[in-house]
Length: 404
Image (tube, rainbow, N blue to C red; front, side, top):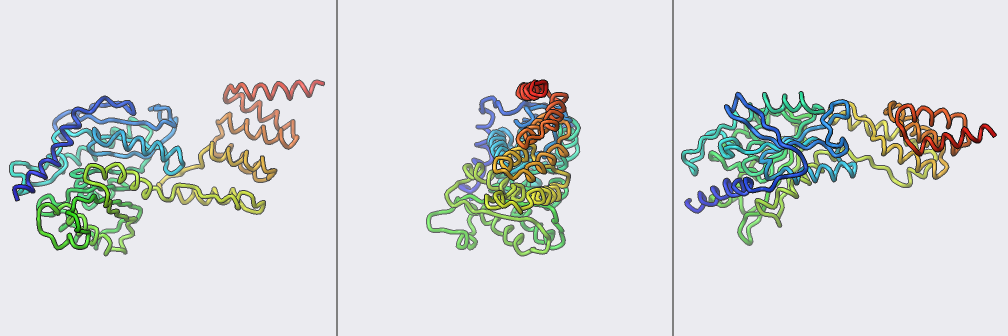
């Protein structure tokens, strides 16, 4: 058992030490919160979506929030993933809050473990800080929505699973990456056996990732028979996954993935990406070219139906992205499907009544369809909302033609 203790201590402390040497980041900014619950100041790193220009002003937009444990290790990767996915319309733009560790093992565990004598987990107090101080502060200070995701790796994964089982309503989505579920003789795994059958997880999502730390020739079936400390982490995850998979009536949106070619540190990046793809698997709008080219296809009906579903999943009203609808409108105009184009441009104005660009676009539509009066009307309206040089030029040209 000595070898187990050494390997566990290495996993618990080695990347925390590395985190203290991390170079300053440039994807967000740091804030320090005085915590009465923890009796200390706690630091967090915060990223506001690039689509909002990093602006904290609430009337610029509202965003779901990812709360990320071990922020000093995971912040930059999660920010990069969310920015890439939102640019690709795979998820909404999101605020990322990276919680920096103080006493990592104490924060992320509850109780004690016989392999680590002298360490007493204060995870309940840490989660109370997140629930009663951090989340209210973020909601009061930044342009947030009600949708929240909780991500943790290793001991952070243990904290995520503890929260999922004991405070399921605190977050909408939970991500455990190679969680240290062996802690305290697999206490969380044992608790799950009594909690899961009676719990309803409607509207909740859970993603679990497991790395490969097994010996050559051992797989996820044969490892279950092992009793050594070296396989305690993966066996604990497999046992919990088995119980989660049995309880199909609890309406949980659940997925797990075993990464055969990744180890404990490397599983973080790929696991974070796969988790967010799974959580927001409903978000991407799917339109086929055959539908776009079909004059009888009700494109506006598809958009309304899709965003109604997205709104139901997210728990608040979400409208189509302005640029997305604008691009579709121009595409329909380019293929001479004018009725569709007009419907899309008008939908964009309804959803974005203060956007000068939306009025400029429908002005282009009326210019294309030879309705100069409406084109002039909408170009004028666009300029009352925003000074757009191109719009001004088009308007001046139309007005000059009218004088001839």
